[in-house]
Length: 534
Image (tube, rainbow, N blue to C red; front, side):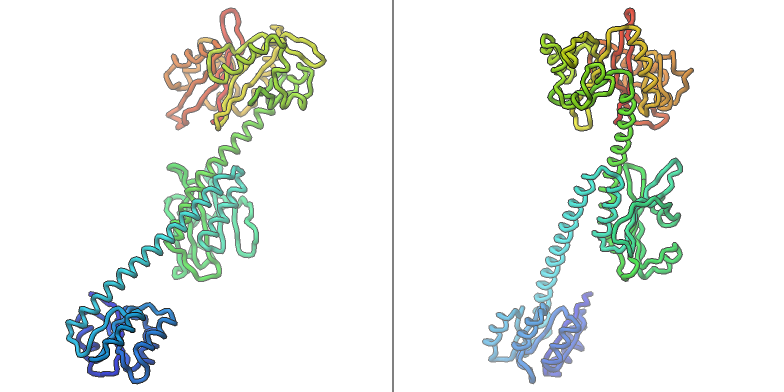
């Protein structure tokens, strides 16, 4: 049954009594009545009826004047005008003022109810349209805000700066007074507050404080949002929060909760809404992807720094060549061997180091290696060192691709002395021993001749179980042991070669080992395997 309110304004007590006591209640409407225009005008503004039945002729003010006053005050309630015989021409003016219908006195109950039903149906449709339009506009604003927020967090790779931005956005989209972001750390998964904005602090602070084991732990374990309102202050008090309203959502990567995003209101008595919860949850989804990327970037940057530190101090002459044949890195030994300073080498076209008669061969080799085509990874070259000194050297290469698909060539130069090469190779292994990437030496059968501690840890193996045994005995290769042999044969032919392994029992995702042929000894080859940073 409808509970819509209908206000009847008429100076006839008989009409008001009929409408108030019989017609409207029996049809399921809530009646309101007024005997004059002034009282009706005030009641319409305070009671906010769904429909008004207005007499055209009232003792104190005309119905038309009341319509004009309502228009000036922004009242948008539908009106049915009640008129007497001979006043139909005035009703035309009333229709221009927005009256939905008019009915001539005397009228029957059926006539007035039919008119009421028509007017309310139109009103309901208009109200539904306005509500749908408002909901659509609100959703568009939400999506626009989330799109901007997603772009903002996706553009940051510095983890601390990213976490502070996420807290700032969480406060902005919910209208909260405070915000905090907690992440799990360590083997025990302890929650630490990493960024926070509190009352009295203008800036979002970088922190590392242990999170309280209450609502944070609840949200992390259940993976469900938590919303406590101002009418549940006792519940907040039991958690230890001196806040009027609290909203927390999990930060989830794939099937694992890694943190909690939290906002609260300390002063204003404003509850967080379902819309706030949906917006904060959507922001947490964007944040999870960005946090994972930032963590991977930070780990990769640390790994690269350690790798560069190792090759920097290596006695092996190593340089990296990027686009347009130009050096992007050269270590001290490479600079010593070529006679140029490192500053002179960076940005130099490496073809300038090659004897003119060998440049076409080196260019063809460089392009074939970048395209992944078959080409020997080791060549005899003559370089033009500083002061025009010619040196006959061995050149070994391997091609690496970054996350954007750009290729770079790692270039090793060696003097053609077997003993010197062996001495420097031994020194190189010593330098790589402490690298955080797994590294190993393999013969052409795939047997392990050397492995650094990082490789032993990755394989969950001991030196006794790995050295002198096939690598396929301790790692599960995609394609099996035969795939490893094939990859070694490709590396021996100078191809860009790699092999992928998994360890299902340890839940390690597929990982790639890059293979490079370092040396050939009496019909056998020696290969360097380096775990590629994914």
